[in-house]
Length: 525
Image (cartoon, rainbow, N blue to C red):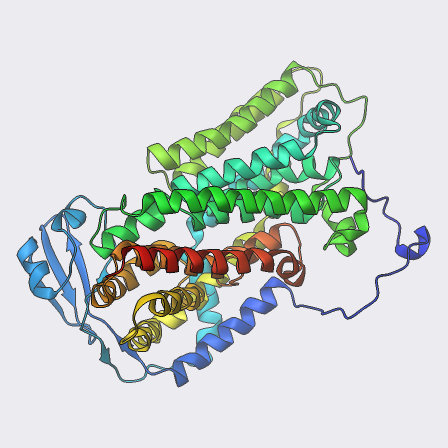
């Protein structure tokens, strides 16, 4: 049901086109392609180097050390070995699986012979990155297939009609509820990549309520990212970073909890301001020029004669049940994308079987075609995720990431107090572009950065806060992260997203910087 546009051009409706400078930003694929080229050139100009990496083998209960030259040695799995290596982390953190990835060993950085990538690495990285992301891609394909099947049954349309009647005049309540859910999910379990599952549910509803694609991305991606930025007990961010820093994740938790409340209020308030603006004047929308394509992709052409009968109600119950099951699986059972995909596929099969019966039954071919068409509609989104990973693999193979980290430690050495922690936050801001994985950056940087806190007389948990607020301020923007896949899913231009999100980036850096300075002044010595 389209409530904002009627498919006419500006000239047909008498509306004057917006004046002013307009920047034609390339598509997500082109942006990532050029970033891949830049990553290749970086391997030619940034000196190669690497830290020794320490990994724990549960079977042998021993540590393996991989030198920068690739030589592997073994040391006993105990606290004494860690102390000798200068790794200030409790042995139990490795033994119980809290730290599962190889970590950098402080003081072991060595310059290596340059390993520049050739031009042939550009297509290779694009292919290899896509292969590495196959688990996420399968999850997205299954999700798309499920959506296609539910749409074919008419359940979305009839349910949407019933919902819009009940929420008339209180449309923002749903934006508020979705945002709050994503903030809580972000701060507790880092609900981000899994959030792509919510767009097919919320986009048609937001369209019917008169909102644009910005509201959809804001209530899901931005709200979830704000929650993750202000993580309290997120195991993929603050917990693993604290473990790698050699401290308990509960240290500094009240500061992070307060920041989460403030961040939640700011992002929901920002969405409320924007929602009021576009409800009063749809042309205020930052994505107004793309409203037709967005509504064509996600809008529901509801008809009054589509009955919301018992079968369609059961189908929607099954469909919506998949999402709390997914969240429960991630938080309580440690599910990853294969198990999440399997759970959605189970629900899809149940809906397909149910749709074979009744007066409005569908044929087996109709259902299979609906699944195939739904999955194919999300191919571009899946490929974007793979292309972004290819960029990171080029930097890793060129030994660029560790060199940037080593340079950062030299930059802050000798500083003290507030200046040190502010510079540290901006270092993590830059590193967030190079290493967009929160857990990846934690194990790469924390064993190196956390001891610097000791030298300037501040608690290590403040470094963890700087890591969170710095890295995640970048992840609102970084094409190497989840942003491009999100924008591709909604066919949104990167320039439109930047126009909307930059105030939130400024807020995180300013508010985070203020909190860090306050922590340093209170707890420093």
